Structure formats: C-alpha cells, structure tokens
Amino acid sequence: NLRVLLRARPEGRVEPGHFEIREESPPSPRPGEALLRNRYLSLDPYMRGRMSAAKSYSAPVEIGAVMEGQCVAQVVEDPTGRFQPGDWVLGGQGWQRFSAVPAGNLRKLEPGLAPVTTALGVLGMPGTTAWVGVTEIAPPRPGETFVVSAASGAVGGVAGQIAMRMGARVVGIAGGAEKCAFVRDELGFPECVDHRAPDFAERLAAACPGGIDSYFENVGGAVQKAVFPLLNDFARVAFCGMVAEYNDPSPAPGPNLMQVVRKRLKLQGFIVRDHPRAFEVWPRTGAAWLREGSLRYREDVVRGLEKAPEAFIGLLAGKNFGKLVIEVT
Ligand code: NDP
Image 1 (cartoon, rainbow, N blue to C red):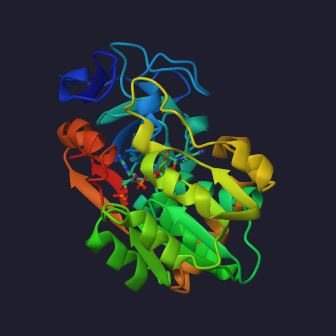
Image 2 (cartoon, helix red, strand yellow; image 1 turned 180 degrees about the horizontal axis):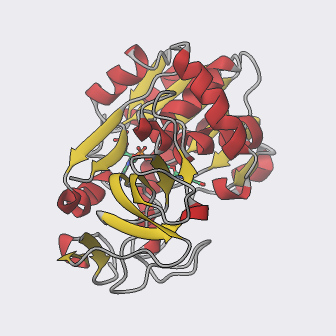
C-alpha cells in the first residue's frame, strides 16, 4: 500500500523532505470497516495547517501519520453489506492507495449524476465553502461590486458564479494572464485582474470604479492590501482563507483595521464545517446547475500519489490551475 506520511513539521516553506513516501502491506478491514481502493485524492490549502502544531480549528497530523485528506474511492469489499464491490464513495481516507475505514463514515456517490471528482471540488467541500461565504457571510446585493481572490480556483471560481447569479458585478483576482483569461472567458466574470502585474493595485481600482461592496478573501498578503482601501462604507468581507500567508513563519502585520471603524465594515471569518446544512443544499443546487450547463469548473488532475507532495507545494505558490486532485494510480 503506497502511503504518504508526515515526516517533519515545516517552519516556513514546505519541502519534499517534510513527507515520507512508504510502501506497506494493504490494511485488512476490522469489524464495521470497508476496504477501499482510493482513486482520487483532494489536495487543499488547509492541509498546510494540519502539518503545523500551531493551535487551529483542527488537530494537527501526528509525525509519522498518514497525511489527512478527502478521497473518492471504489469499494473493494464491505463485510458490513452496506456497499457493493465497485461502488464509488467519498470519505476522509488520506494520502494513500488503500484504506480500511468505518463503512458508516462513507457517502455513496452516483457516477451517473456528475463526474466523481466533482465530489472533491465544485460539488464538494470547496464548492460548499463558496456557497456559504457568498450566500451567508458576505452576500452582495444586485448591482453591487463583488470581488473574489484566487478566482480561477476551487472556491473562488464557484463563489464568483454564485455572486453573478445574485445580480452582483463580479471582479476576479487571479495570478497570470492565462488564469485571468479563463476566469473571464470560461467562468464569465466581466473582469479579472492579474495580481502579478506590477501595477496591480491601480488596475484593481480601475476595475472597481464604484469601490468594493463585498469581498471574498482567499489569499491575504499583497492582494488584501490592495483590496482594503477600495472597500466602501458598510462593505462585507468573508474571510475564507489567506493561502498566500500559510508558509509565513510568523503573522505579517495586517491592514490598518481603523478602516473597519471609519467605514463601518462588517468582517466575518467562517469555517465551512460549521454549516452542515450547506453540505446538503449546495451539492443538490450545484449539481442541477452543472446539468443545465450554467456552472463551470476546472480541475487540475495530477497522476500518481507519489507526486502529491510536489503538487501540494505548488498549490501554496499558485502553480495549480483549477481544483487540484491527485489521480491515485
Ligand atoms: P485554489 O484552487 O484556489 O488554489 C490555491 C490558489 O491560491 C492558487 O491557485 C493561487 O491562485 C492562490 N495562491 C496560492 N499561493 C498564493 C500566493 N502566494 N499569493 C497569491 N495567491 C496565491 O484553492 P481553494 O479554492 O481550495 O482554496 C482557496 C482558499 O479558500 C484558501 O485560502 C483556503 O484555505 C480557503 N478555504 C477555506 C475554507 C473554510 O472553511 N474557511 C474551506 C476551503 C478552502 P492565483 O495564482 O490565482 O493567485
């Protein structure tokens, strides 16, 4: 059984040496467990937090333990009788080829309804995050300007499309000309600004002539610095993540939060797992939109579990283009 373990905790940038790739014998299911062959592993920015011992909303992965992560898998055998061999399921099996897990913790997938990988991205946890952030945390009103960073990504791409449906004028922020073209041409955002351009702050201001009413924050750092002065009075900010800062050994000095007072801003952080109902509502809503062709998404599928460390390191530097998924060969 090929497995990727956490070997050491990074103090800054993540390096391949922080992981250990091991070949072990496959597990045997204990009572109540099903044996699974994992087919697709989701790589997500939150995994950087699990590699660190710093206090957070979830416990860290122990040194020597398999890296945590959601997988789409096929059932090899299920002595509990809940699933048939070959059934597709979703669960938290981690970075490994085979897993024996409690059958009751698995969700059955219907491959006829949507491609199975969508359960890790557009219809899964990232899509649900977008749904919560836009509809509950920082909802735009019709005609308002809604800005989202990491706009070509798993969360950002969906967030912008939901905001457009709510009648907002959506401006994306993404890294590089190719990602910006995708956000405009494929996702249909009217504007997307390249945060790698030397005059990014001026370009963002030009794209938001009436200021920003609602901001979906995925990135932090220099992007956040350019957004804050453009926030209008009574703007809403959904603090979803700050992936540009996850490798920083200590917190960077933040924006001047006196603006929160002067502009009477409402800022709110959120963690998607606190919104269990959204995990029922969004996959149904999103699947219907996918079927009618009105919801677009992009996946970045990397073949081979042994490539997971390198692909994850790339995710924290913007090298992925779309929802990052490992095909577990
Ligand atoms: P993405 O698919 O968007 O991939 C990450 C993207 O972040 C990269 O492609 C890149 O896009 C951008 N990025 C990475 N490093 C940098 C950097 N140094 N500077 C600027 N941009 C960078 O990932 P997700 O959609 O899965 O996640 C997006 C955000 O949502 C993350 O912050 C994540 O932690 C957060 N999140 C929060 C949840 C919650 O419950 N609060 C749940 C799920 C995700 P580009 O090249 O365009 O800049």
